[in-house]
Amino acid sequence: MSQVKRVTLDNQTQEALWKLLHSENDVVADVYGTEVRLTVLRADSFHSDDISAEIEADPELKQMLLESEEDIKLGRVYTTEEAIRYIREHHSK
Image (cartoon, rainbow, N blue to C red):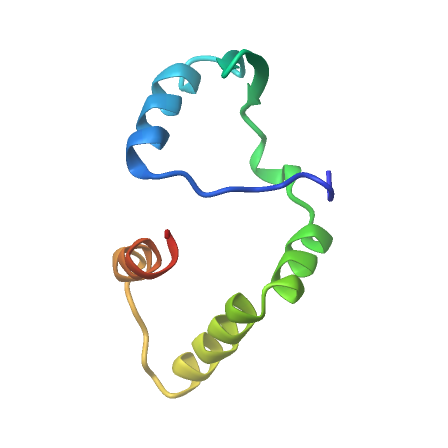
């Protein structure tokens, strides 16, 4: 699974896909005349090696994680909602 490309979708697209997938595990969608299989992955389907490789391949993400560790050491912590809002505002372009 390490060769799978992961993408972030805008909120509207996520909502539309979720309506299709929330009660199904697999859906085949027609995308510009090509059949695309959408599959719900188990939470444990991502291997730590894949995650590590993805972090190493993205210098900006790696720097952000290192800064997060420093923030924790210095007592600067954020709620999950604040983190999600930050990611959506600054990294979903």
